[in-house]
Image (cartoon, rainbow, N blue to C red; front, top):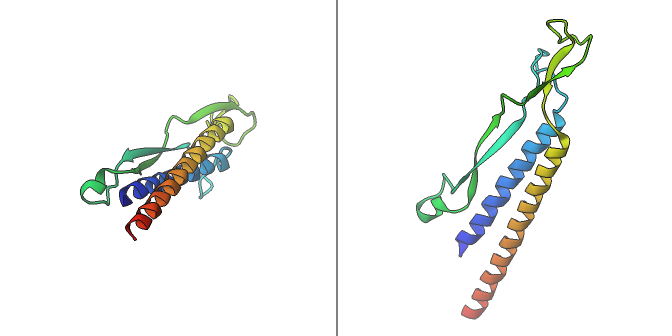
Amino acid sequence: MYGALDISVSGMVAQRTRLAVIAANVANQNTLEDAKGNYSPYLRREIMFSAGDPNGSGAARELGVHVSDIFANPGALRSSYEPGSPYDDDGDGYIMVPDINPIVEQVNALEAARSYEANVMAAEATKTMMAQALRLIA
């Protein structure tokens, strides 16, 4: 029975991490410099989920979900016409900027929030069933 609760908790942790990645993407949608002040447009971060718990043992190793990777998408740049920009190397007025669409990110955030809520509801149902089972035993 604890496995069902672990599955829901792993889903909540994974969706919370997904929301953090989405928030970082939105916060950095206009970032063109790295921490040292060099021209390096922010690359959109993406998250990869995998089944199971790599830290678990036995059957628990196959239950739930975990974040297997958070990576920067190297193709997440688009050209933008900004004449006079200090980052325009060839003088044509085009620079590369992060290709982050706030509407897409908001939809992804809503999906992650709904998934988180579904896992909370599943965990609550599991807790209720466990409490009922303990009442029957006692």
